[in-house]
Image 1 (cartoon, rainbow, N blue to C red):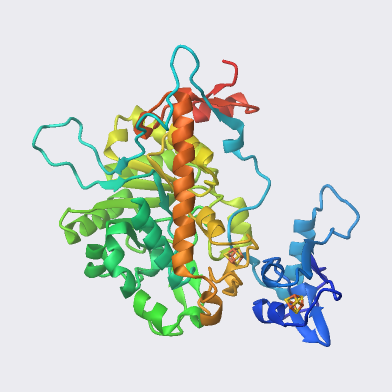
Image 2: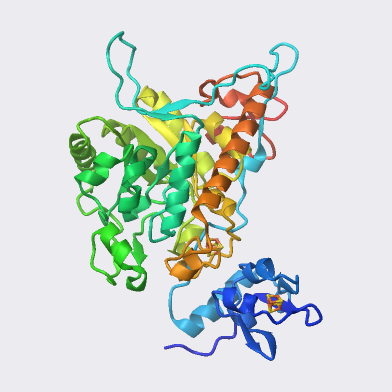
Length: 493
Ligand code: SF4
Ligand code: SF4
């Protein structure tokens, strides 16, 4: 039963009446119902999500939105998030939901890792004058090369950055279109996520990794055949160990057709795959899919970064996967219980290092490629991930930020004011897929240039030479145990 909320508004919205032209644009554009017009623009601050759409569209620069100071007496043990959460739940009696990634101030290990630079004895390379190779291949490599013998299927990436899994349903169809266009332009891949592939995108399948998740949404032989590769989704960094739920009101006729479910029904992904309870079961599914694609496409497995991730990854390699995506606990999500997103799983940095080390120790690292996702914010993060052992990285939240996402974390409402995580036709029309593709392409282009610059400074001319090369990393301000897990020396040594 709902009860009165004590929760104070998170944001204050100020309208400068001297500037306001009463055009109503902000009122029409606010998808959270935080503005109305009653002789003047009137904010309902309790509804404001902090998405900043109103301030961006106002032609007069008359609106400003700012976070409110928490009004309670400072209390080191009872911070705002704890009190706010209790008040919300005491009013609603429901789980707190959220979208986007974990925003808790846990240590960010990327920011405590530094890349080496070449000086005197190992000269640096000028990427403007000399070729720099960013191409990389994902897939199983043989124990030794035999002339004339074909390799197992490989994904060829012109840049070691892909777009992470985001389902049609969580994001709009035009976001999927934009990702596909950008992936084609940049010679990389997007990932369908677990919601199937809209028929308009089947023709772009050669740039798309399709997912087979516990709900089996949209899965049929054509879906696999259209794709560049298939990924079995076991887990997701933002909500490891739990399933997903797309409410029926978001299951439009198009989403229903894509997911192959009735219109208006809840799309529930079970927490586990009901046919996978062991590595042997996983192996059966991997090989069932390989059979379905005539062994012509790589089949990978995505797992969340969890405590025993290295042992799990070892099993997945032995089950026959061609690539493993490791998704860290900072990964984004369309919707997750807040308590799960913020408290389950481990950071990508340590998970990646632990997996790479374990597979090397077991002599099976070459049998699989590693994709790092869930917490890559910059070209530097990407390069550090590769030095820690990744073959490539995948970006989700960073891609959405490139499209205009303001990190308001209200994706789960389906009311994204920027037209990204919504199926509302009016809201979705705010995103122009052509312009969005251009922005995504520009982001990858810029990161590619920065990666070349950093590689050149390190005296390395091919990205594959950096993979797992932890000697080119140093830790700053990390304890000795963390350094040991990362396999990295402290700065100065
Ligand atoms: S968009 Fe700006 S000018 Fe138009 S009504 Fe809102 S505050 Fe006034
Ligand atoms: S995608 Fe939209 S709703 Fe989600 S965090 Fe970004 S701006 Fe907010």
